[in-house]
Image 1 (cartoon, rainbow, N blue to C red):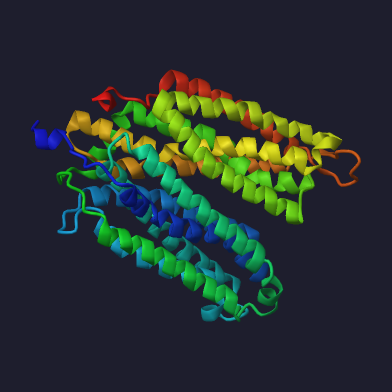
Image 2: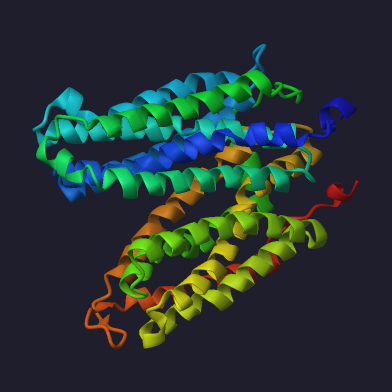
Length: 454
């Protein structure tokens, strides 16, 4: 095996390059956050599509993600053009994502104010699957991490990418609170007429995504890794034989039950148990976003000192201690911001730390495989986890809804409003899952490699 095949020479990346490379996460997080937030509102509340059909459409979208992320990762690995492997697919998939996104969010312009349930369902399924499939542009883009940045720089890259994600998420939350809720009556009254502020917002969000996606196409140099030709089935067998890769995917799937549940239930917990609403809620939401951003810097510094695996175990341990405090929501003292704010901040520190890892882990695993095979299959290593993780995500969403559907009702004195007991139990249940994840990760997975020391 020649030196050119087995070794990749990385140029030290400047902060400017890292920031530029991370910037597409801002536009894409706005895009997908708005889709996740607006679809249920639009198709269920505005157009009254049967909830079972809405659920079917959303489920098909998840399958579309799983299939396309794997396929596009593999395909970009095997592409050879003068622009390199990754850039052509960013150029192709970005307009498809934008067009399907727009059509998904403005069906009334094309179907009228009272579309038939059949037509609306077909429209929803087609463009949701297309949008979610085109979202595989993120797999192609993420594949670049292993090709553009050395292992010691990837934590910083992940930090900046998550910073962009959090800012984009904050914008989506503000859009929902300030615009989406205010135009609900107008939308419901005339579904065929698109409110101008809604349409302008979609155009702005689309423009942001186009800007940053095409900026990296123009400014980031193409990868210098050698091209290679292998069959998809052979590459899949290579992945499946990589025991550590499969174990890492399973670890992420297991702990995703807790992280997904925390994200899905935290809003309801804040409002219904802690009784934090209006201005106080905005304070808590801003504090959570800022804490998660700060946590990215904190955990990256810790990672540089003690390594990735010890850092991950520390994140799990902190969340295990914090999550069961949700039980304190049963008591009267919890219904103040003085309890709610510290609890949510502590949880946000763990969440922020966890978000660092997925972008790092699979780039490192791809390079670890390259050390053995001489081929950097960054695309398939970025895309393959989507198959397992979307299965876990589907079950985790079902698990979260089961927690919220528990029949027992409780109240915290002196309030007269009852809430579901699941809003107290989600914390300790999530902690138990993370205990399993911590033990599993400590025993089975490897995140720090000998070749990193060279």
